[in-house]
Each structure stands twice: as C-alpha cells, then as structure tokens.
Amino acid sequence: MTSAYVLINTEIGSEDDVLSQLKQIPMVKEAYLVYGVYDVIARVEAPDLDKLKETVTWKIRKLDKVRSTLTMIVVEKPNK
Image 1 (cartoon, helix red, strand yellow):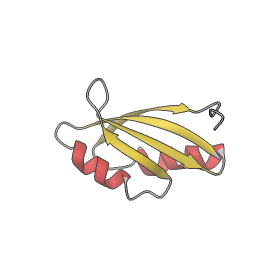
Image 2 (cartoon, rainbow, N blue to C red; image 1 turned 90 degrees about the horizontal axis):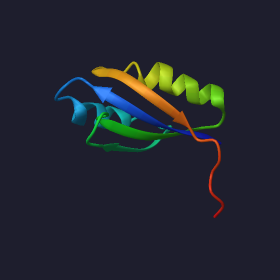
Image 3 (tube, one colour; image 1 turned 90 degrees about the vertical axis):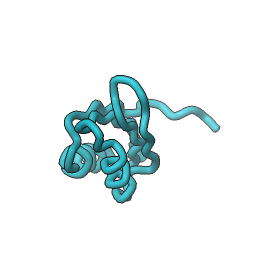
Image 4 (cartoon, rainbow, N blue to C red; image 1 turned 45 degrees about the vertical axis):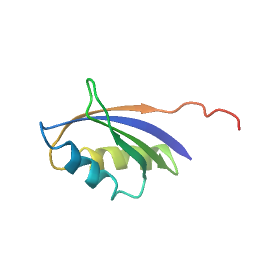
C-alpha cells in the first residue's frame, strides 16, 4: 500500500465544497480544512504508486475550484 499527504490550495471561499468532494473519493482516507499556506490536507492510500499518481492527477487536481496541490509521498511508515 502506498500513501501520501496532499496539500491543496482552493479558490477563496470554496474550501468546504472541495473538502466535501474529496470525501467522495474512495482512496482519500482523511481530509481536513487547515489554516496556513494551504486550505485542505488529504491522506490518500492506493495499492501502488501508479494508482496514487492517477488519483492525485485525475481525481483530486481535476476537482472544481482546486487551484494547486503539493503531494508528499510517504516513504516509511512507523512500526506499530
């Protein structure tokens, strides 16, 4: 399983709408509104890197009112 955190900039005033759309994407496991440089952060999980890239490129980045994204792919998960 491959996972990443996606930081998202939205059009002004559309944060709630983008958050709602993100929660409809099955590979988005968590999504939150945040304050700071970015408006929303999402945790995405996919079976492999190609599916992860596909989700970010064709589902998240194509959402209405998403202006830009920054994807941080998780390299190592902590031991439980």
